[in-house]
Length: 259
Image: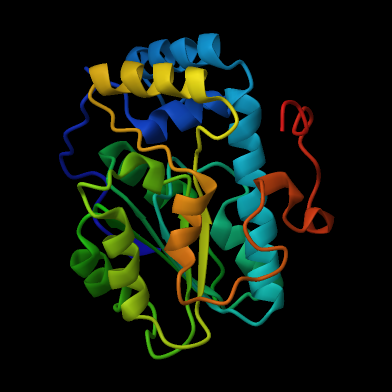
C-alpha cells in the first residue's frame, strides 16, 4: 500500500467524539478515546442494541463485498472507511479476486495513523488510503483516479456514513456527484441510520450528538431510497441490513431483536 505518510504530524481532536472512533468502541476496538467511550455509553442508555447494530452493519459490508466480487466487480471505492477492523473490505474482495483494487477514504487522522500498518492487500491487487471528506467529492475522485480506472465499473461504498451528512451539506447531491464520474455497470452500496423504528430514542440521540458537535441526520426509508434514484436496485432492494443476502455470511447474535 502507498499513500500519505502516517508518520507525518496529524492533528487528532480528543476533546469531542468522532463517529469513526465511536464505531470502533462499539465493535470492541481499542483505537478510541475517553470522549468517544463516554458518548458511546450515552448512546447505549438510549438503545442498548447499538453495538449489535454496528456488528450487523459490518457484516452487511462483508456480504455486499462478497456479492460484488462474485459478480465480477474488481474496483472498490470505500468512503467513510473507519478504523480498520479485520476482515476489511479489501480482504473480502481480494479473497475472491486477488487482483481487486481498493481505495479507502476517511476524514479522521487516526484512521490514517493505522491505515499503513493494517490495510495490507495482495501483490496482484492494490490497496490505497486517502484522507478526505465526503463533502469534497472532487478531492476523493482525484485521489481515486491514481489507483482506479474510472472508465471501468466501480463499487462505491458509503456504509454508515451519510447519516453524518446533513441535507444542508447536500448529502443527495454529493452522492450524485460521485456517481456521475462512474461508468455504467458500477454499484452504490449504502447503509443509513433511521428513526423509523425508534423515533423518541433517535430524537434524544440526535440532540446529544449535536451538543457534542456531531451531526446526525437520520432519514426515513423514503428519504434513504432517494439516494438510489435512477439506479436499478439489486434484489431484495432496500431492506434492513441483516436481511440482505444472509446466505453470504454469518448471522450476528441478537440481530433480530427489535426489527
